[in-house]
Length: 228
Image 1: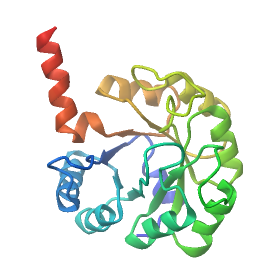
Image 2: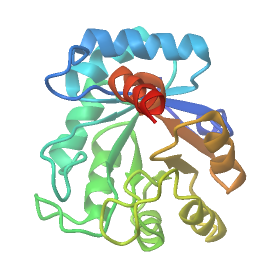
Image 3: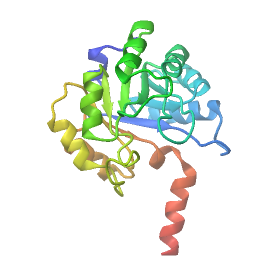
Image 4: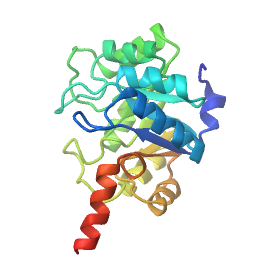
């Protein structure tokens, strides 16, 4: 599947499910993540977001919806698909859309965000989703050629406070800026009501991960509620 504008329009108002497990967890296996992704598609997910080359490959084979792929390398600073080579590896693994750090911070390979995006476009058929942390990030990412803008890093780069739920103010700000790119709300969306709020604030589509695909966190929420 090679995505184009028509395909992206099919994601309007839809749910994207992020299927990721952390290193050391029982579910940290590409085959398991692909099965989780396929289950999410049965439930109505219009696209899937996964982390890691093997996860992208297995998920691509397991589902018939667009796959957003990324490669986390490190834990601090720019670590979501931090270099052009990381991005091209995700595209080669089968990602229809490659999610990359879309902030204005220096990248490990010394390339600018615009150079990275241009490299992905030149050497693959993949689109690029810029994971941003602020309005300024989003404006810069759109100018750099990103195909989609995400709020993934809101509250994690020091530019904005970390909200309890989704950063609805940022979603509204980016939507109001009319950047001409689909805005994907992502980050701390833990309930159907919050997902609806994100759409109402101006998001094109909504990504939900932990609240759907991370049993350890969900179990902890229930345990804490019972304790309280």
